[in-house]
Length: 105
Length: 200
View 1 (cartoon, rainbow over the protein chains, first blue to last red):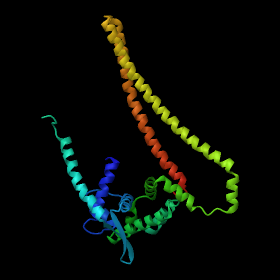
View 2: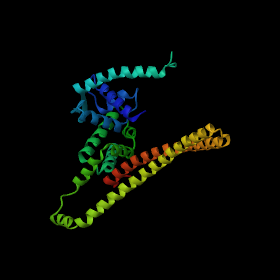
View 3: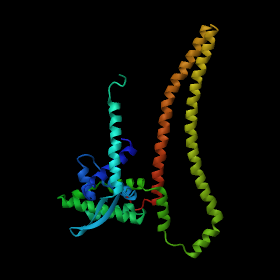
View 4: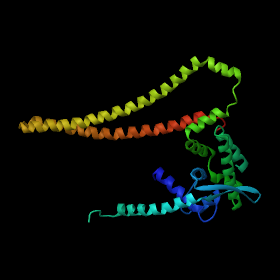
């Protein structure tokens, strides 16, 4: 898949993974696994990018005697997710046009 | 490999990167290994799931913007002593031209490569011109009802067309190859800046 496109899609995936409740690295990968394989290094890069873009915030909380980083979606991140849903309708209709067997009727 | 060994390996492999970056990544991978073990995986399995230290390093180096790398390299060096500064100032006539020369060499390499590509494409374009020319000449001969020369010109045009088609693929492949090479060279230069000490 086109790198730019995939990057954008993965960003949205990670935002979706932390949308309903704050999540942490391992859980994000595990939640996404049935749909898309994500390496730890890739996730790190995405989280960093989203944090710099103000789409999520990070907090450290104690868990089982150690620190764990939890990622929380911001308003901006939630807005991005909504935007994506709208954009996707457009993509789907483009896809339908591309897949249509006969373009001249 | 257990978690401790893995993180130590990773730290060594990343030395030369921005310090806060290293700490953050070590914590990130450590946390994932811990969480994976909490789910019931053995320490070995959890570490194996992360992948090789070298792969991680390669990806990280490709991700960090070049200016940040250079800045970090310059900053991690200790403070300069007074005599070193004096030496640098006195040595200016020596090292400054050397740096300029090095930059010029790199630049000229780029220009040579670019010139190669441009010349390839210009041959291709001139071949296209040749096709058009051949067809034009053939038309002129035809108008003058000289069938044989017209056929010859048309044949020549056809020959050039075949050759240019062949060459077109070569041009595209060469351009793509150079682009890829340039990208690789970028990562290579980054690696040189960080230094490969301790990296296996």
